[in-house]
Image (cartoon, rainbow, N blue to C red; front, side, top):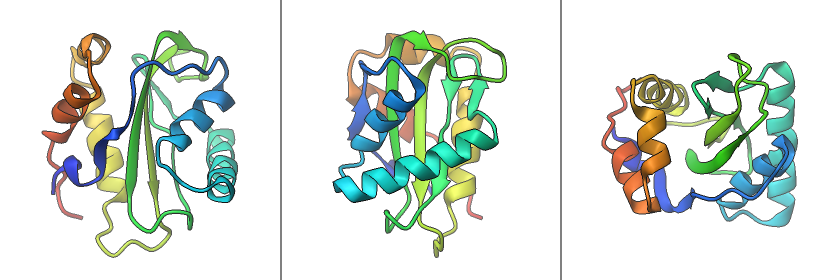
Length: 153
């Protein structure tokens, strides 16, 4: 299975405007094009998850994620904030790249953890931060991320 099944160009924003963790989470959620009530519920779920421990995995990358009834299939969004943002990452450095992953509580294909793992694996490649920073269009971001395969669960 490939990430392209969950990741689309319209769910990419290369110039996030938020200046706080909450604002960036809301901006990422808005990329999923949910209704207002669903967005509010998803924000609460993501906040709960962040309170357990930051999803900032280091190297300028965060992968906020949760399961929620507001989606009927696994969804992924990507945002970039060139100046970085304090996201309480494990390396205490600002986060510039945000991969949002949301999956329904019961998912027949069970791809939530493999997708999360694949994005984390992709994020550890040595030149990923530089490449993500230099990508000029959402199309280039999705093409690069989409090319990574997800092993079946």
